[in-house]
Length: 261
Image 1 (cartoon, rainbow, N blue to C red):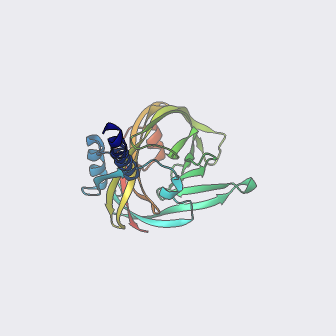
Image 2 (image 1 turned 60 degrees about the vertical axis):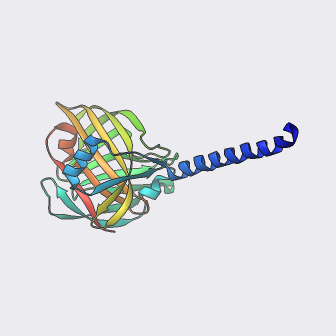
Image 3 (image 1 turned 180 degrees about the horizontal axis):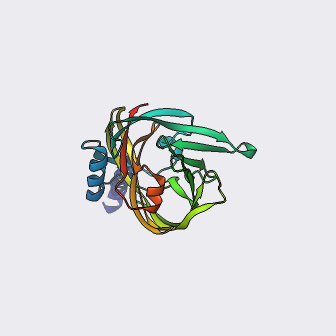
């Protein structure tokens, strides 16, 4: 009897294992759901408004950063919802520049005067190596470059880095205004339902924190970027004035939401 029952027992075990494997595969496909930390929720509500960042959604590894920030020429309208220029509308966007050998670089206009210069690395990361503030007439170069959307980053993962910072005048780049170093963390917080005037999107949330001394001042700042697949940036929290961002810990935080695609 035991010998005759052995195949049926094996079949039952195989069936159970199959169900477990299917369940495991389904969980991996759906991703992990990460509740928004309380401090981040408070900051985002204060700078973007209540209801903009909503329910936590399944999060997956960043396998292709360009899905979340398409590298193509475009302009978009953002509404400023917090900060000194709250209530205004800004036309921002991304534009391509060519480098020797056919390599591409990109200028991301984050405010009317503040632009970040970025590129895609051979490993597939999108990084930002320099910022210019036309209003202040300075260029800020960071070594190594700022992470923007790192390839392969996992939900909940934090990357740490130390940068050397150089602030130079645009009219005379050899004239260094300030220099120093900062320590930073870049965290893939999770995926959340984001509702802005342009629509409702599943958006990945990245938080950047930096602290250090550049020139005579100590700086400590926190910023947020929210990216929706196929759309790009849908909301952001950043410092308007690059000299304030790097040199002074002042309350000049600005929140922006996407108005139109």
